[in-house]
Length: 159
Image 1 (cartoon, one colour):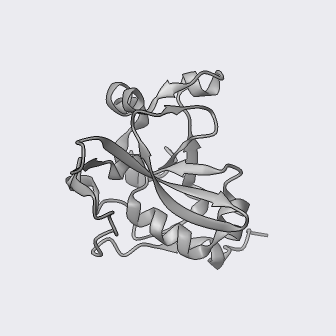
Image 2 (image 1 turned 90 degrees about the horizontal axis):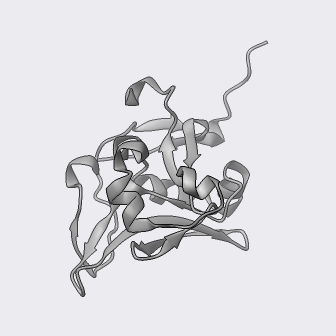
Image 3 (image 1 turned 60 degrees about the vertical axis):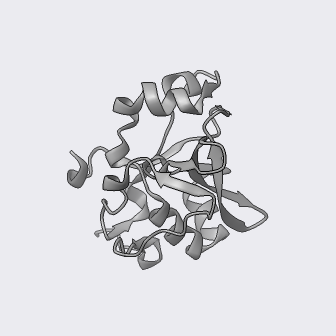
């Protein structure tokens, strides 16, 4: 008997809506990627990607991961701020059920600050049943608890 699709796991992302950027944002680094991605998908096609160094227990600078390993990270497959906004609307229980982590990064939506020119990546954080969007300074070190959210490779839309 085929497995039934859980409609609660379906995300609908209206990519014509501009994401809610912080007022200190100067620019989106890759604006051409912001509106890309499926408009509707099952959360099961989202994976939690870690760099080899992160998997090995080492920390890696976020900026290095973004600039040096971008081919492996594959920004086109990463989630965007709009995806995070829709996941956060589903709440902390949804996040905790589908992602056994505390945070998940959306590398497609890196921004530059107009305050000091620094770069930041949005991420979802879960704590106490709540899920919120925050911004990671790319000067931070990332360990194995900081995966990128991206669409799985067997998803034909991203091959």
